[in-house]
Amino acid sequence: MKLAEAKAQFIQTWGSLGAQWGINRTMAQIHALLMIMPDPLSADDIMSELNISRGNTNMNVRELINWGLVERVLIPGERKEYFTAEKDIWRVATEIARERKRRELDPILKTLNQLQDVEGDTKDKHVKAFKDSIQGINKFAHQTDRVINSFVKSEESWFYGTLMKLFK
Amino acid sequence: MKLAEAKAQFIQTWGSLGAQWGINRTMAQIHALLMIMPDPLSADDIMSELNISRGNTNMNVRELINWGLVERVLIPGERKEYFTAEKDIWRVATEIARERKRRELDPILKTLNQLQDVEGDTKDKHVKAFKDSIQGINKFAHQTDRVINSFVKSEESWFYGTLMKLFK
DNA sequence: CTATTCTTTCACTTTCTTTTGAAAGTTCAA
DNA sequence: TTGAACTTTCAAAAGAAAGTGAAAGAATAG
Image 1 (tube, rainbow over the protein chains, first blue to last red):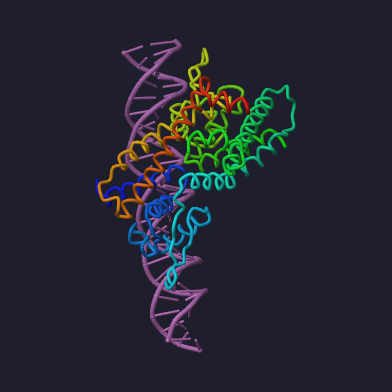
Image 2 (tube, helix red, strand yellow):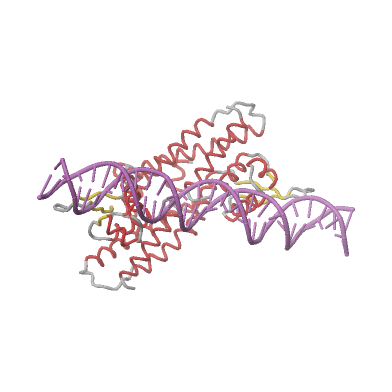
């Protein structure tokens, strides 16, 4: 397989992967592109590599920067801004975990905690079933929260000690 | 908070949670509804609880059954089909993990393996950067695969031994 | 066998997301 | 201060995804 072909396929695979995970396709593609390029790219480079508009490029690069997955790079003597992506996939994974936790899990924990105290007779089976479900989910969510926290700041944690070294 | 209100809020929260994770909102809502109901519901019950059409109900219930999250229940003497959801959240989590792995991770592993052998001079920095990226991601994906496998059939694994008992 | 009750399918509609591109904004060298 | 080079914004258009409901299909009771 030729490099150009492989590159194209990787970008497209990473793109649809992102789409499945609720991340927009273009954003994932830009990320893929930047991951495999040895040097930083400008907005124009990205536009022409992926055939997307200027606005789209700008929006998604900005979003990637918010996620902490891409960085602005200034090249001395150049007017343009350039962009690079984190290339260590473990860091990428922890950044994503951190961000999704913040955006998704944290609000859910808040809601679940509120739903714990439904008023009503526990002898009513509907009330009981509801309370049981919520309690189970709530416990699970808190446990998940702990696991993710450990993963995100792995260096200091048992998670790193136990899991990471088995793999990395 | 009254039961009815809490129920509605739970269903809506679970629904948008699903949406963020690439699962369609209605599917997640039906699942939420069935999780908190003590007894099985019929298609009509679901339709009226969630205000959705017959076709939509049917499609999403079928999909939930494919995921292994919902079961058909036959009630003796009744013509209608009824549905229940798995209520143990740990089982729910492992079912989801299993299913997403099958649908998402497995195909990616296949693609990555192919992309490993790009022809070209490793002294070319573009080729080198590409190969390095793919290799890193591939390793990571395989490791993820192992973790998920352990999680999915947890009873027999070190994963269960080490992690689960810390939490459950 | 036929009527009745329930389930499934699918072409069409609606809703939600993403993309575009032109216009406005910003920065900086001269 | 000006204008060239670049970035950002945003309203409109295109595209994708989900939902509807009527009609066809199954299953069962009588």
